[in-house]
Amino acid sequence: MRTTQPASGSRVKPSSDEPQPDALFGPDDLDPAARHPAPLPHFSPARGLLDVREIHTEPEAAASVRGSEILARFPRARVVEVASHWRIPHLHGNEGNIGRWVRVKAEVLVLGVRKTFTVRPNGRSADWIAPGLSNGCTMACAYCYVPRRKGYANPITVFTNPGDVIGHLGRHIARQGHKRDANQCDPRAWVYDIGENGDCSADALICDNTLDLVAAFRHWPTAKASFATKYVNPALLGYDPRGRTRVRLSVMPQDDSRLLDIRTSPVADRIAAADGLLEAGYEVHFNLSPVVLRPGWETAWGELLRQMDDVLPRAVKAQAAAEVIILTHNEDLHEVNLGWHPRAEDVLWQPSAQEAKRSQNGATNLRYRAPVKQAAVTRLGELIAARAPWLRVRYAF
Image (tube, rainbow, N blue to C red):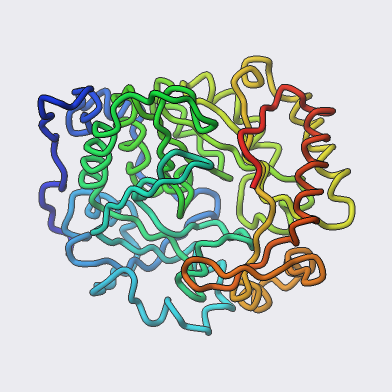
Protein backbone atom coordinates (compact mmCIF):
# COMPACT_ATOMS: atom_id res chain seq x y z
CA MET A 1 0.00 0.00 0.00
CA ARG A 2 2.84 2.42 0.62
CA THR A 3 5.07 1.76 -2.36
CA THR A 4 5.75 4.66 -4.70
CA GLN A 5 5.83 5.20 -8.43
CA PRO A 6 6.62 8.25 -10.55
CA ALA A 7 4.00 11.00 -10.33
CA SER A 8 1.75 11.26 -13.35
CA GLY A 9 1.91 14.25 -15.65
CA SER A 10 4.88 15.67 -17.49
CA ARG A 11 5.81 18.73 -19.43
CA VAL A 12 3.82 19.14 -22.62
CA LYS A 13 5.68 20.04 -25.75
CA PRO A 14 4.25 23.17 -27.41
CA SER A 15 3.28 23.08 -31.06
CA SER A 16 4.38 25.81 -33.42
CA ASP A 17 1.01 27.60 -33.34
CA GLU A 18 0.73 27.83 -29.57
CA PRO A 19 1.33 31.45 -28.55
CA GLN A 20 3.02 31.13 -25.16
CA PRO A 21 5.55 28.34 -24.52
CA ASP A 22 5.72 29.40 -20.89
CA ALA A 23 2.00 28.77 -20.60
CA LEU A 24 2.69 25.06 -20.69
CA PHE A 25 5.06 24.93 -17.76
CA GLY A 26 4.01 22.94 -14.72
CA PRO A 27 5.69 22.28 -11.37
CA ASP A 28 7.84 19.51 -12.86
CA ASP A 29 9.61 22.15 -14.96
CA LEU A 30 10.67 24.23 -11.98
CA ASP A 31 13.85 24.16 -10.02
CA PRO A 32 13.12 22.20 -6.80
CA ALA A 33 14.03 25.19 -4.64
CA ALA A 34 11.66 27.42 -6.59
CA ARG A 35 8.90 24.81 -6.51
CA HIS A 36 9.01 24.58 -2.73
CA PRO A 37 9.95 28.06 -1.46
CA ALA A 38 8.39 27.21 1.91
CA PRO A 39 8.03 23.44 2.31
CA LEU A 40 5.39 22.27 4.71
CA PRO A 41 6.87 20.74 7.85
CA HIS A 42 5.91 17.23 8.87
CA PHE A 43 2.19 17.44 9.46
CA SER A 44 0.77 18.20 12.88
CA PRO A 45 -2.99 18.67 13.33
CA ALA A 46 -4.14 22.27 12.97
CA ARG A 47 -5.60 22.85 16.42
CA GLY A 48 -8.37 20.32 16.06
CA LEU A 49 -9.26 21.04 12.44
CA LEU A 50 -7.82 17.72 11.30
CA ASP A 51 -7.31 14.60 13.35
CA VAL A 52 -7.10 12.02 10.59
CA ARG A 53 -7.66 8.51 11.92
CA GLU A 54 -8.97 6.75 8.83
CA ILE A 55 -7.81 7.03 5.20
CA HIS A 56 -9.78 5.40 2.40
CA THR A 57 -7.63 5.13 -0.69
CA GLU A 58 -7.75 3.75 -4.18
CA PRO A 59 -4.73 1.48 -4.79
CA GLU A 60 -3.37 3.70 -7.55
CA ALA A 61 -3.66 6.75 -5.32
CA ALA A 62 -1.78 5.08 -2.46
CA ALA A 63 1.00 3.99 -4.81
CA SER A 64 1.56 7.47 -6.28
CA VAL A 65 4.20 9.86 -5.03
CA ARG A 66 1.60 12.30 -3.67
CA GLY A 67 -0.38 9.51 -2.06
CA SER A 68 2.72 8.15 -0.36
CA GLU A 69 3.52 11.63 0.96
CA ILE A 70 0.03 11.97 2.44
CA LEU A 71 0.10 8.52 4.05
CA ALA A 72 3.46 9.40 5.61
CA ARG A 73 1.97 12.57 7.13
CA PHE A 74 -0.69 10.57 8.93
CA PRO A 75 1.24 7.49 10.09
CA ARG A 76 -1.28 6.61 12.82
CA ALA A 77 -4.29 6.55 10.50
CA ARG A 78 -5.94 3.26 9.60
CA VAL A 79 -5.60 2.77 5.83
CA VAL A 80 -8.51 1.10 4.02
CA GLU A 81 -8.29 0.18 0.35
CA VAL A 82 -11.39 1.03 -1.73
CA ALA A 83 -12.23 0.44 -5.35
CA SER A 84 -13.52 3.98 -5.93
CA HIS A 85 -13.32 7.22 -4.01
CA TRP A 86 -16.95 7.86 -4.99
CA ARG A 87 -18.31 4.56 -3.67
CA ILE A 88 -17.56 4.01 0.02
CA PRO A 89 -20.77 2.50 1.40
CA HIS A 90 -20.42 3.34 5.09
CA LEU A 91 -19.59 6.96 4.16
CA HIS A 92 -21.70 7.82 1.13
CA GLY A 93 -25.44 7.36 1.48
CA ASN A 94 -25.18 6.18 5.09
CA GLU A 95 -27.86 8.12 6.96
CA GLY A 96 -26.28 7.11 10.25
CA ASN A 97 -23.43 9.52 9.57
CA ILE A 98 -25.64 12.56 10.17
CA GLY A 99 -24.83 12.28 13.87
CA ARG A 100 -21.11 12.26 13.01
CA TRP A 101 -21.28 15.05 10.40
CA VAL A 102 -18.44 17.13 11.84
CA ARG A 103 -16.45 14.23 13.28
CA VAL A 104 -16.22 12.55 9.87
CA LYS A 105 -14.81 15.76 8.39
CA ALA A 106 -12.08 15.88 11.03
CA GLU A 107 -11.15 12.20 11.19
CA VAL A 108 -11.64 10.77 7.67
CA LEU A 109 -9.63 11.40 4.52
CA VAL A 110 -10.16 9.90 1.07
CA LEU A 111 -7.47 9.54 -1.61
CA GLY A 112 -8.35 9.06 -5.25
CA VAL A 113 -7.03 9.52 -8.76
CA ARG A 114 -8.81 12.09 -10.91
CA LYS A 115 -9.85 10.58 -14.21
CA THR A 116 -11.90 13.40 -15.78
CA PHE A 117 -10.32 16.72 -16.73
CA THR A 118 -13.15 18.83 -18.06
CA VAL A 119 -12.60 22.59 -18.03
CA ARG A 120 -16.04 24.20 -17.87
CA PRO A 121 -16.93 27.76 -18.91
CA ASN A 122 -18.22 29.94 -16.09
CA GLY A 123 -18.29 33.69 -16.68
CA ARG A 124 -19.20 34.74 -13.15
CA SER A 125 -16.49 34.13 -10.60
CA ALA A 126 -14.01 33.00 -13.26
CA ASP A 127 -13.79 32.48 -16.99
CA TRP A 128 -13.31 28.75 -16.47
CA ILE A 129 -13.83 26.14 -13.75
CA ALA A 130 -10.72 23.97 -13.58
CA PRO A 131 -10.78 20.27 -12.70
CA GLY A 132 -10.01 20.49 -9.00
CA LEU A 133 -7.53 18.52 -6.96
CA SER A 134 -9.96 17.94 -4.12
CA ASN A 135 -13.61 17.42 -3.38
CA GLY A 136 -15.16 18.05 0.01
CA CYS A 137 -13.94 20.02 2.99
CA THR A 138 -12.84 19.61 6.59
CA MET A 139 -14.93 22.65 7.51
CA ALA A 140 -18.69 22.33 7.94
CA CYS A 141 -20.53 25.35 6.58
CA ALA A 142 -24.24 24.63 6.93
CA TYR A 143 -25.12 26.07 3.50
CA CYS A 144 -22.37 24.36 1.47
CA TYR A 145 -23.55 22.81 -1.79
CA VAL A 146 -20.82 20.16 -2.09
CA PRO A 147 -22.30 17.65 0.44
CA ARG A 148 -25.45 17.41 -1.65
CA ARG A 149 -23.59 15.20 -4.09
CA LYS A 150 -22.27 12.68 -1.57
CA GLY A 151 -25.01 12.14 0.98
CA TYR A 152 -24.51 12.22 4.75
CA ALA A 153 -20.72 12.58 4.73
CA ASN A 154 -18.36 15.00 3.07
CA PRO A 155 -14.74 14.53 4.17
CA ILE A 156 -11.95 15.80 1.95
CA THR A 157 -11.16 13.67 -1.06
CA VAL A 158 -7.65 14.49 -2.31
CA PHE A 159 -6.65 13.62 -5.86
CA THR A 160 -3.08 12.39 -6.00
CA ASN A 161 -2.30 13.02 -9.68
CA PRO A 162 -1.69 16.77 -9.81
CA GLY A 163 0.58 16.40 -12.83
CA ASP A 164 -2.32 15.19 -14.96
CA VAL A 165 -4.51 18.12 -13.96
CA ILE A 166 -1.74 20.66 -14.43
CA GLY A 167 -0.79 19.24 -17.82
CA HIS A 168 -4.41 19.43 -18.98
CA LEU A 169 -4.72 23.02 -17.74
CA GLY A 170 -1.51 24.02 -19.51
CA ARG A 171 -2.82 22.73 -22.82
CA HIS A 172 -6.19 24.44 -22.31
CA ILE A 173 -4.55 27.75 -21.44
CA ALA A 174 -2.30 27.59 -24.50
CA ARG A 175 -5.30 27.02 -26.76
CA GLN A 176 -6.99 30.19 -25.48
CA GLY A 177 -4.13 32.45 -26.52
CA HIS A 178 -4.18 36.00 -25.23
CA LYS A 179 -7.39 37.39 -23.76
CA ARG A 180 -8.52 39.97 -26.25
CA ASP A 181 -11.66 41.30 -24.58
CA ALA A 182 -11.71 42.47 -20.98
CA ASN A 183 -14.57 41.21 -18.83
CA GLN A 184 -15.60 41.35 -15.19
CA CYS A 185 -13.55 38.22 -14.40
CA ASP A 186 -10.31 40.00 -15.31
CA PRO A 187 -9.30 42.61 -17.90
CA ARG A 188 -6.24 40.71 -19.19
CA ALA A 189 -5.92 37.17 -17.85
CA TRP A 190 -8.05 34.07 -18.30
CA VAL A 191 -9.21 33.25 -14.75
CA TYR A 192 -9.48 29.59 -13.68
CA ASP A 193 -11.27 28.66 -10.45
CA ILE A 194 -9.13 25.87 -9.00
CA GLY A 195 -11.21 25.22 -5.86
CA GLU A 196 -14.86 24.91 -6.84
CA ASN A 197 -15.55 21.87 -4.64
CA GLY A 198 -13.19 22.45 -1.73
CA ASP A 199 -11.06 24.98 0.12
CA CYS A 200 -7.51 25.18 -1.23
CA SER A 201 -6.18 26.80 1.96
CA ALA A 202 -7.40 23.90 4.09
CA ASP A 203 -6.23 21.37 1.48
CA ALA A 204 -2.72 22.77 1.95
CA LEU A 205 -2.72 21.27 5.45
CA ILE A 206 -2.73 17.83 3.86
CA CYS A 207 -0.35 18.00 0.91
CA ASP A 208 1.30 20.26 -1.68
CA ASN A 209 -1.47 20.16 -4.29
CA THR A 210 -2.33 23.83 -3.73
CA LEU A 211 1.34 24.77 -3.85
CA ASP A 212 1.77 22.90 -7.14
CA LEU A 213 -1.15 24.74 -8.73
CA VAL A 214 0.07 28.14 -7.52
CA ALA A 215 3.56 27.32 -8.81
CA ALA A 216 2.19 26.31 -12.20
CA PHE A 217 0.12 29.47 -12.65
CA ARG A 218 3.05 31.71 -11.87
CA HIS A 219 4.57 30.47 -15.14
CA TRP A 220 1.39 30.92 -17.22
CA PRO A 221 1.41 34.61 -18.24
CA THR A 222 -2.01 34.57 -19.92
CA ALA A 223 -3.88 32.96 -17.03
CA LYS A 224 -4.65 33.43 -13.37
CA ALA A 225 -5.77 30.96 -10.70
CA SER A 226 -8.56 31.82 -8.29
CA PHE A 227 -10.02 30.19 -5.20
CA ALA A 228 -12.30 31.16 -2.33
CA THR A 229 -11.39 30.37 1.26
CA LYS A 230 -12.68 30.63 4.80
CA TYR A 231 -9.48 29.33 6.37
CA VAL A 232 -6.39 31.40 7.17
CA ASN A 233 -3.34 29.25 6.45
CA PRO A 234 0.02 31.03 6.94
CA ALA A 235 1.73 28.43 4.74
CA LEU A 236 0.27 30.18 1.69
CA LEU A 237 2.50 33.18 2.35
CA GLY A 238 5.53 31.18 1.15
CA TYR A 239 4.07 30.02 -2.18
CA ASP A 240 5.39 32.95 -4.26
CA PRO A 241 2.39 33.40 -6.62
CA ARG A 242 3.84 36.47 -8.37
CA GLY A 243 0.41 37.96 -8.97
CA ARG A 244 -0.94 34.94 -10.85
CA THR A 245 -3.29 33.65 -8.11
CA ARG A 246 -6.35 35.44 -6.77
CA VAL A 247 -7.48 34.57 -3.24
CA ARG A 248 -11.12 35.37 -2.55
CA LEU A 249 -11.64 35.75 1.19
CA SER A 250 -15.22 34.80 2.01
CA VAL A 251 -16.75 37.02 4.66
CA MET A 252 -20.11 37.48 6.36
CA PRO A 253 -21.25 39.14 9.60
CA GLN A 254 -19.63 37.38 12.54
CA ASP A 255 -22.93 36.43 14.19
CA ASP A 256 -23.96 34.68 10.97
CA SER A 257 -20.56 33.04 10.75
CA ARG A 258 -20.76 31.66 14.30
CA LEU A 259 -24.05 30.01 13.39
CA LEU A 260 -23.32 28.88 9.82
CA ASP A 261 -19.54 28.78 9.20
CA ILE A 262 -18.69 25.85 11.44
CA ARG A 263 -14.95 25.12 11.96
CA THR A 264 -13.78 28.07 9.87
CA SER A 265 -11.37 30.90 10.73
CA PRO A 266 -13.04 33.86 12.47
CA VAL A 267 -14.17 36.50 10.01
CA ALA A 268 -11.93 39.11 11.65
CA ASP A 269 -8.93 36.84 11.02
CA ARG A 270 -9.87 36.45 7.35
CA ILE A 271 -10.08 40.21 6.91
CA ALA A 272 -6.79 40.72 8.76
CA ALA A 273 -5.10 38.14 6.49
CA ALA A 274 -5.68 40.24 3.36
CA ASP A 275 -2.66 42.50 3.84
CA GLY A 276 -0.21 39.63 4.30
CA LEU A 277 -1.57 37.78 1.28
CA LEU A 278 -1.21 40.89 -0.88
CA GLU A 279 2.37 41.41 0.29
CA ALA A 280 3.10 37.74 -0.47
CA GLY A 281 2.13 38.29 -4.11
CA TYR A 282 -1.54 37.31 -4.30
CA GLU A 283 -4.36 39.33 -5.73
CA VAL A 284 -6.91 39.64 -2.91
CA HIS A 285 -10.65 39.85 -3.50
CA PHE A 286 -13.62 39.26 -1.22
CA ASN A 287 -16.71 37.07 -1.43
CA LEU A 288 -19.65 38.61 0.41
CA SER A 289 -21.16 35.19 0.72
CA PRO A 290 -23.68 33.99 1.37
CA VAL A 291 -25.95 36.89 2.14
CA VAL A 292 -28.62 35.39 4.41
CA LEU A 293 -31.76 37.49 4.71
CA ARG A 294 -32.81 37.37 8.34
CA PRO A 295 -33.99 40.04 10.79
CA GLY A 296 -31.24 42.64 11.21
CA TRP A 297 -29.23 41.54 8.17
CA GLU A 298 -28.83 45.07 6.81
CA THR A 299 -27.39 46.38 10.08
CA ALA A 300 -25.05 43.40 10.38
CA TRP A 301 -23.69 43.76 6.85
CA GLY A 302 -23.29 47.51 7.32
CA GLU A 303 -21.19 46.87 10.42
CA LEU A 304 -19.07 44.29 8.58
CA LEU A 305 -18.40 46.69 5.70
CA ARG A 306 -17.45 49.42 8.19
CA GLN A 307 -15.05 46.97 9.87
CA MET A 308 -13.43 46.19 6.52
CA ASP A 309 -13.07 49.88 5.78
CA ASP A 310 -11.45 50.47 9.17
CA VAL A 311 -9.06 47.51 9.10
CA LEU A 312 -7.90 47.10 5.51
CA PRO A 313 -4.89 49.12 4.36
CA ARG A 314 -4.98 51.35 1.32
CA ALA A 315 -3.02 48.91 -0.85
CA VAL A 316 -5.60 46.15 -0.32
CA LYS A 317 -8.49 48.51 -1.06
CA ALA A 318 -6.86 49.77 -4.26
CA GLN A 319 -6.95 46.34 -5.91
CA ALA A 320 -9.93 44.74 -4.17
CA ALA A 321 -13.13 43.60 -5.81
CA ALA A 322 -16.06 41.59 -4.50
CA GLU A 323 -18.53 38.93 -5.49
CA VAL A 324 -21.95 39.16 -3.87
CA ILE A 325 -23.68 35.79 -3.54
CA ILE A 326 -27.19 35.68 -2.14
CA LEU A 327 -28.03 32.43 -0.36
CA THR A 328 -29.25 29.46 -2.37
CA HIS A 329 -30.36 26.57 -0.16
CA ASN A 330 -31.23 22.95 -0.95
CA GLU A 331 -34.07 20.70 0.14
CA ASP A 332 -31.93 17.62 0.77
CA LEU A 333 -29.31 19.61 2.67
CA HIS A 334 -32.10 21.09 4.80
CA GLU A 335 -33.03 17.55 5.88
CA VAL A 336 -29.41 16.70 6.64
CA ASN A 337 -28.92 19.87 8.68
CA LEU A 338 -31.97 19.08 10.79
CA GLY A 339 -30.08 16.01 11.95
CA TRP A 340 -26.90 17.72 13.10
CA HIS A 341 -27.41 21.51 13.23
CA PRO A 342 -31.13 22.42 13.28
CA ARG A 343 -30.48 25.96 14.56
CA ALA A 344 -28.92 26.82 11.21
CA GLU A 345 -32.18 26.02 9.49
CA ASP A 346 -33.92 28.72 11.50
CA VAL A 347 -32.32 31.25 9.14
CA LEU A 348 -31.50 29.17 6.05
CA TRP A 349 -34.95 27.63 5.53
CA GLN A 350 -37.50 30.38 4.85
CA PRO A 351 -40.19 28.94 2.56
CA SER A 352 -42.30 32.10 2.72
CA ALA A 353 -39.48 34.10 1.11
CA GLN A 354 -38.00 31.35 -1.08
CA GLU A 355 -38.99 29.54 -4.24
CA ALA A 356 -37.95 26.18 -5.64
CA LYS A 357 -35.60 25.90 -8.58
CA ARG A 358 -34.62 22.63 -10.20
CA SER A 359 -30.84 22.43 -10.65
CA GLN A 360 -29.09 20.88 -13.64
CA ASN A 361 -28.44 17.67 -11.67
CA GLY A 362 -32.11 17.32 -10.73
CA ALA A 363 -31.84 18.53 -7.12
CA THR A 364 -34.42 20.89 -5.64
CA ASN A 365 -32.75 24.15 -4.68
CA LEU A 366 -34.39 27.06 -2.92
CA ARG A 367 -33.56 30.66 -3.66
CA TYR A 368 -35.17 33.87 -2.49
CA ARG A 369 -38.09 34.95 -4.65
CA ALA A 370 -36.98 37.27 -7.45
CA PRO A 371 -38.36 40.52 -5.95
CA VAL A 372 -36.88 39.68 -2.53
CA LYS A 373 -33.49 38.86 -4.00
CA GLN A 374 -33.37 41.92 -6.23
CA ALA A 375 -34.24 44.19 -3.33
CA ALA A 376 -31.47 42.60 -1.25
CA VAL A 377 -28.89 43.06 -4.03
CA THR A 378 -29.90 46.70 -4.38
CA ARG A 379 -29.76 47.33 -0.64
CA LEU A 380 -26.37 45.67 -0.23
CA GLY A 381 -25.07 47.79 -3.11
CA GLU A 382 -26.23 50.90 -1.24
CA LEU A 383 -24.47 49.72 1.93
CA ILE A 384 -21.24 49.11 0.02
CA ALA A 385 -21.42 52.57 -1.56
CA ALA A 386 -21.93 54.15 1.85
CA ARG A 387 -19.55 52.09 4.02
CA ALA A 388 -16.90 50.77 1.62
CA PRO A 389 -17.03 52.82 -1.59
CA TRP A 390 -13.63 51.48 -2.65
CA LEU A 391 -15.04 47.94 -2.96
CA ARG A 392 -15.87 47.29 -6.61
CA VAL A 393 -18.57 44.64 -7.08
CA ARG A 394 -17.61 42.32 -9.93
CA TYR A 395 -20.95 40.56 -9.96
CA ALA A 396 -23.95 39.81 -7.75
CA PHE A 397 -25.76 36.51 -8.01
